[in-house]
Image 1 (cartoon, rainbow, N blue to C red):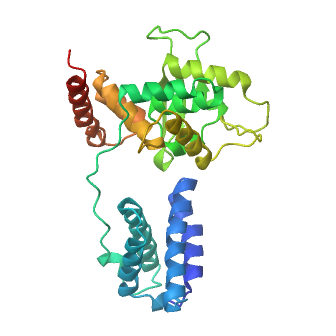
Image 2 (tube, helix red, strand yellow):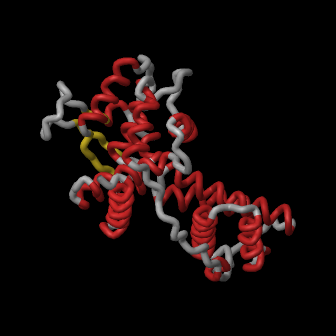
Image 3 (cartoon, rainbow, N blue to C red):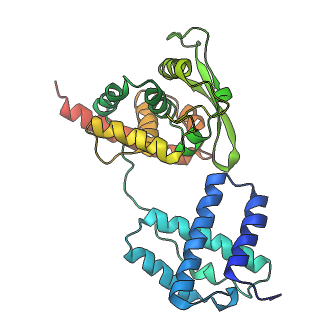
Length: 299
């Protein structure tokens, strides 16, 4: 081991060197830093540890037991585990520690809970709920008609949108949207006539300001993740839709597109999935949705 280094110094170096080199998206970097910062706070408070060489495997195990007692969801604990593993792997590569103590850290298993998907009745109630609010209609229609992620929506710029001169239902008269996805991978996907119509209406009333971000708050500032989440939550509640959120709209898009016969590779491209296997989960979801609707709507 080259030298003794404090926990705070090691985190600073990890952020400035490793995360910068990997060119992670800003949101991902924040999540990694927040996850490791929480661990450091725990070590300082419970064990009075300030230096890296004082951290032991038992400390990490106790930290995850603490997170479990706090009631953190498995998906959150799983993400924190991978953040911490990345941190200690980097420290080992720099020879700040003689061994990677995080190797024995086993992330919580993935939940088998099926993604929440809105039924056709539900998403139509949702569309009715926001129909009178131009900006909010554009936000939710984008999510519902493209399946884009929240982080992708936050990063959207005015110039990322291309609309046809005249919006019609003609199959070849579509718009497009340029998206920067996970790992800063770029993709361009189709905007159907419903999305184009909603965005065109919003662009007409969008404030004339210097910000390039597409969606703006009533205070003239770019909207952040929490703002979008609150918009979606508001109309889900108005439509009396339970146990749903922003990501539900992504699942709803994919499942209903499968149900309507859209080619799965088209859906894979729209969602930005690297593997077709990831997208294939929506085939079974669409099948179950069809079973449910045919049973409930027996003639």
